[in-house]
Length: 368
Image (cartoon, rainbow, N blue to C red; front, top):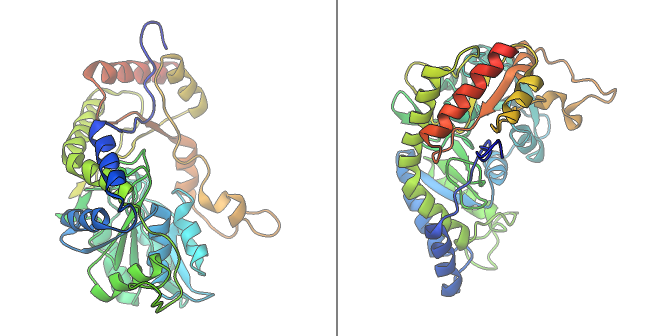
């Protein structure tokens, strides 16, 4: 609490009566795993990605891992990824048996820089994994030609970008696969879960095998697979949330526009030409002491968080044997990690909430 006003958290997941009723309905049905709710969720989500095949799994990380496993990666294969992302982006590459190669970001959008992608291609490169960070689409109009020129697969990490798009094409409908997350803080959720999208029917079938121990029919295993199925309880919640996504997206975008017009002393999020930004995060750049700035917001009851304070290439699993971050030269990535701060942007913010955020940020910018 700040005075008589409650603190505004960085994010506020929605679990309402509709979601609760959907979960109870499925529990009472007795069909709770890989049943009709999952199939319906896949069909309905397909409308969000230009009619692509959709394969539901138990997390966004599982979506990334299975999409990469379906590419049959081999030891020594390289996948180009941004270091400025959540660790799952690179973890999935490692778990699929390949090597992540880190490329720098565009300082305006925070998404992977196509020029850095092109420079990172080697004879061992087999795939590119652009991340649609914070809900802003990566520059797919420039990345896809690079991939086509070198015969590379593109797996989109769309975990934060439900309903985002570029030049009229939705994210998840560019590469061989798009991977979404339904974690509770995402723009829509299913408590936990993920979705893989693809235009390739055979690729979709392989994904379905991989998520279910390598079988479509019980005890008729065709390949080695895992258990990464989505429950029908989660799917039912996801279907409810999917039905609300358009309205929530409009509200996030309206909230962002409100902040854009009123914040001073900080760099507000950029939006590239032709991009539909869905603002999973509203991420500003702060000059000076970012931690002090964040503390000043907290004193005013405004929650915030730096996503991400440590780039992946500097995390322990990705250091060299002597504890160094490897050969990567990623100046924009390193600069962003010290400057970014994400503010509340969730749909249930009121105008009063937004005005409190504006006042706190503008005051903190003056005193920084």
